[in-house]
Length: 262
Ligand code: TMP
Ligand code: ASP
Image 1 (cartoon, protein in one colour):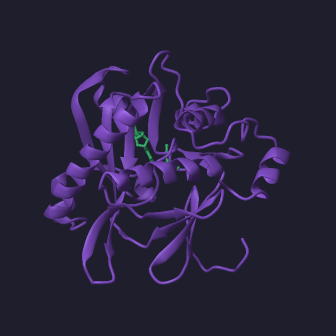
Image 2: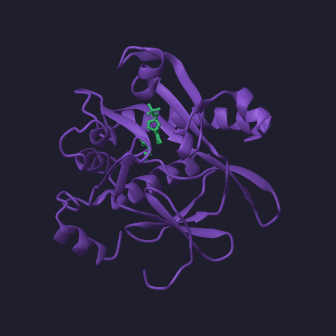
C-alpha cells in the first residue's frame, strides 16, 4: 500500500481502512477460517479472487438496482466501499439442504427446498453465531420491523438474480450469506444496503453437472486442493484474465501483485 491508512477493523478474512469522508478501503486477506476460527489456514491467492468476485457480483447487483456498499475496485486486493453501520446479523438464503440445516433439522443432504428458505443468525463469535428468530431480533432491537421486511425481500431478489447468473455458467447456487447495514448519505437520508462480501467464502456453489464443491466447503470438509473452487468460480465468471492465478506458487502471486490490476 502506497500511503499509510488508519486500520479501523481486522476480521478473519478482511481488513478495513479509513479513507476520505464516508469511504472505506476493504482489503481481502488469504486467511481462511471455519467453525468459528477453530480451523485455520492460508489459501494463497484467495484474497485476490474474492476481491475480484465480490466486486463483480456487487457491481452487477447495483446495475439491477440492489443497493450495496461497493464503489470501485482499487487493486488486486482492495476495493473502495461506503461506510455502513452494520447490523449484528447474518442473513442466510438456502435453495438446497446442506451444512447446518441438515445437521440441525435432519433434512436430507442435497434435497432441493420447496421454496428459498431465509434464516437469521446473530453475529457473535463467542456464542458461535446462533440462529435467531424475527421475534429475537425485534425484542433485542438488532433491527427494526421495516429492516426485517426489507432484508427479506432484498435477500430473495439477490437469490433470484444470482441463481440465474450462476446457472448460465453451469453453477448451482446452493446457499449464501449476506449482511446489511445503513448508510447515511450526504443529504442525511438513511439507506439500507448490503455490505461485507459475496464470494466463495460466503456462498455454496456446486457444479451443476457433477456437483463438485466450488467454495469454502473444500476447506471446511478437507477436500483436495481447496483453492481450486475459488479459481474455477473466478474463471467461469470471467474475472480472472486467462492464464492468471492458475497456479498459486509464491512467485506467481507476488509477481501478479506487482503488476497493475485490470
Ligand atoms: P451453514 O450451512 O454453515 O449455516 O452456512 C450457510 C451459508 O452461510 C453458507 O453459504 C456459508 C455461509 N456462511 C458464512 O458466510 N459465514 C459463516 O460464518 C457461516 C457459518 C456460514
Ligand atoms: N466464517 C466462519 C469462521 O471463520 C465460519 C465458516 O465460514 O464456516 O469461522
